[in-house]
Image (cartoon, rainbow, N blue to C red; front, side):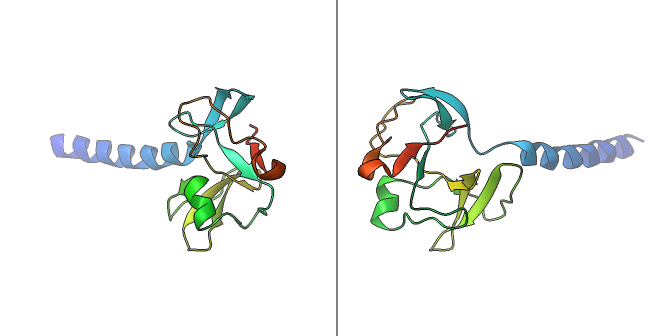
Length: 128
């Protein structure tokens, strides 16, 4: 009887864990120098790039080294306002409401939003 109880517990845990993980958003709303914005798990401000499309990131190579993409796991899938973009190198990136998301290497502490307006206004703080 004890083995049966353990098997039921394993089945229940296995059934609940994936559903919980699927409901977790890859970013949250945080407070920044520019007001409320999307932030990553380290509370660093996220940005959008005006040259992107809902299905394509146009920030690759050297651009992506200073504007690191908010990477998604290879098995990530769209949910609500969150979608997944396949980058030029085949890696996956999170997008929110059709806008691929990035951080900015010159933001060194949570809440900074020093990338807003960079490149003649092409970079913007990601709005929740």
